[in-house]
Length: 80
View (cartoon, rainbow, N blue to C red):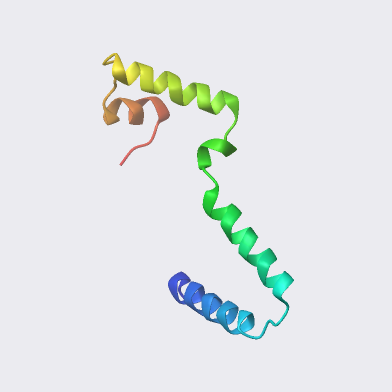
């Protein structure tokens, strides 16, 4: 079964299951969880070292210190 179909099936299962819940406090907990997940920003979940690396890369790009993609492939050994 392909992934898209699995995702759609899981969504339908959850919709059906949620439609049977009668406990308001439980539904509120689920709603709170969803709200928290929507508010998450990937930048809040990375380490300080990763943030510093991103900032360094942005600074280098702003200074025009860029390498072409071919150079990155050469450095990291990936070939087409």
